[in-house]
Image 1 (cartoon, helix red, strand yellow):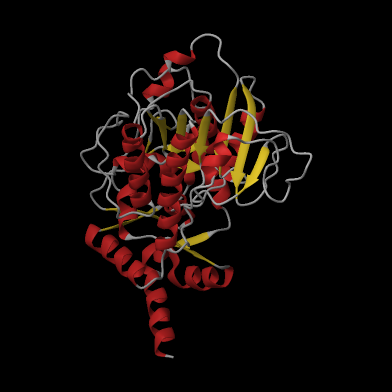
Image 2 (cartoon, one colour):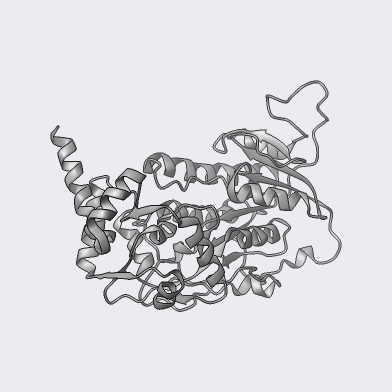
Length: 386
């Protein structure tokens, strides 16, 4: 990985040629938002949008492909407007300048996806993009993982510096994939001299997202593990996109944490959301989470609970040194999250349909957040006996 100092890349000081930037995963989510921002940037002359389908961004050069396809190297090396197979015809222009920067956002973080297939896509996709970029002469690849890679541990510094050791394990949803992507990023510049890799690590991402941590706020009670002291830090997708834009335009370098200023204590979260807690001993909470996941009743492994128990707040100092500031506060993002969660009902990480919610919530009352899982266990056992 590139040297972390300085955060602002000196080579981009002064006049520079306009950039050609490729974005993978450009049709939806963060990728779609970033594509739109780059199209409006004065120092970006072309944006290649890569995805398995064409998105809505007008003015981007759309290419439909799977990012695990090694042919992406040819696309990055010599790409012209509308080069996907469906749009190619005799009127296509000659190949244009090669790509300067690739922002890789084609990740599968779906809680309900098959874990093995999800890992195969995420790790193979990142590996292919890094190798193809190096082969095509791309000078920079921007990756996005998560601040979860630092791990949630009771002895973490609050806040964590960007260069803190990555102490996470693969026990939580998708964290194993993200750690492997981090390892690929670290090795890439050594394997491919001249390739610069920038990595962004956002805090809890909010804004049209669905993760184990956003589902935590869909429960009728906030599960608190006795003896733990969590701190909550969020990152709105708009702030992540603005940070990714800086990286794509080569204004920042190295490993960068992205999040709101500061953090919220558990008591502040409960006061702001109006959701009361249900406190359980660690053995009960962790045992129930492990059992439910083993039975296939919830998508979240027990490792996800660590991120609601221990701090993993990040400082974001390198982005601040570059002049970046979040537009959203923790309080504002939490309010947005509560608004998005309205009408959804989740028990132990499992999102319930209306019929399930009415039955479970009515029967379990105030203790539904975990006690209600017993009903799910009994239902699964009955189904297997039929």
